[in-house]
Image (cartoon, rainbow, N blue to C red; front, side, top):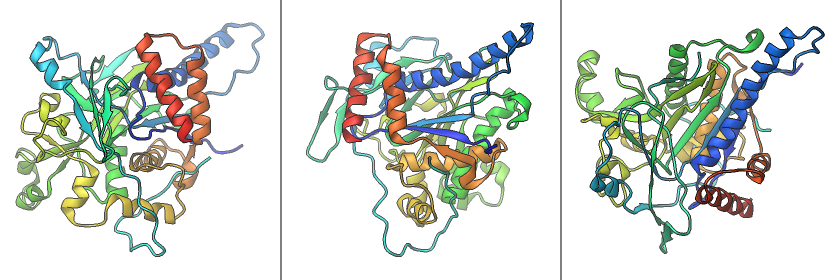
Length: 398
């Protein structure tokens, strides 16, 4: 029997058409429902007098995608936004095209970090989600200029996650594992709720360290953090005191929702987003609010951290990954970073490492899955129109 692999579904995007949150959620709920139905079938089989052999459990799966601009309000946001606050968040935002990995040179430079590559091919609990998302720009809310940048109106969403206000959009990769924390027959590791949150943190920290040479860590606040380079040099002697100083920046947000031990939601990792030095609210959504209510704590990204260190760029590291045998079906930086994260997740849950731990769904397969979900979908008219418009653009590009 073939070894169990983590199934990786990357929902594609092409500027300016990013995955609608509602559509990503349809995919997530389909996969989650498969796990819940399997649990129900086990209960039915055990109570039947002449039960047939139970079906095989669904495999662990990762959904990844790049979201369109959205501000989400968590459950701690008890006071409604004032009209002025809402207007500030939803003011037009200028989004530049996301970068693609540069064409591979004939002789790549020596690696500064070793990358591995995946292979092609309790009821309703919630714990500190700092992440959930989104919106999709449509013709009514988007305009473009000659540089390819678009002006889009971010949406505003009340989310069931914990926390306050946060932002998600292009330049991030969102990673939603769908796992059974109590898998049948020990198919992979078992996790408590607390340990699963730690799994997401360790997977992200491992991705940043092994994939990009970025030292990341956790603090008493949710998420994964880095210390900006100047603070690392200044406080190197006293790590504990250093953690109480300013200069921490969040590079990834975390959030989990569980139903009968089946996971949903997950991590949002910043790949290439505006940093704190950009105070222009027209181009930097983070300048419009205090992320998650944490004053004195900025945000950063993989691109910014690599630039501060003066080493190889994201594109160079991703070329090395491709040159070492990594699959090249993921076209954007965000998709390639998701592939590295998937490999780390597979390793941490006890599946085979490297190429053997992950099976990546082809783009055509992912498109057909989304088409099937939308064929008989119900929902708000604007939401469905947005989802179908996105899918048509992706099919044209495919």
